[in-house]
Image (cartoon, rainbow, N blue to C red; front, side, top):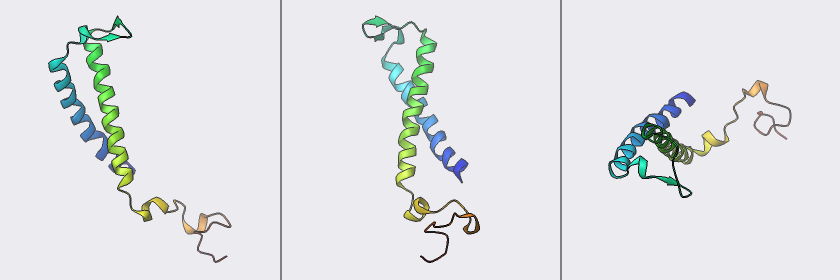
Amino acid sequence: MLAQRLMWIAWPAFLVAGVIEMLVFAMVDPQDLHWFGSPLALSREGVYTVAFFVFWVLTMVSGALTTLLSLSPFEVNRCPLPVTDRPEGCPKNGQCG
């Protein structure tokens, strides 16, 4: 289930990052960019690559936050251990008190 959720986040983020990349660099020339007043030392392709990964990470963070907030209380509070392997005193071990 975790791998499926990861793909729910990563694949749409990849597609959106590609669209953002095209939109941004249709209007901005990477050679005109400056970092703290000095020109970037990267080639155009380097700027495109770094920018794509930044856009991808940002959209994955957004998707991950949305996925986290969509979890039900049962999924959030579910104990990952089977009932027989839960430590003594665990409130979810099926024992009273």
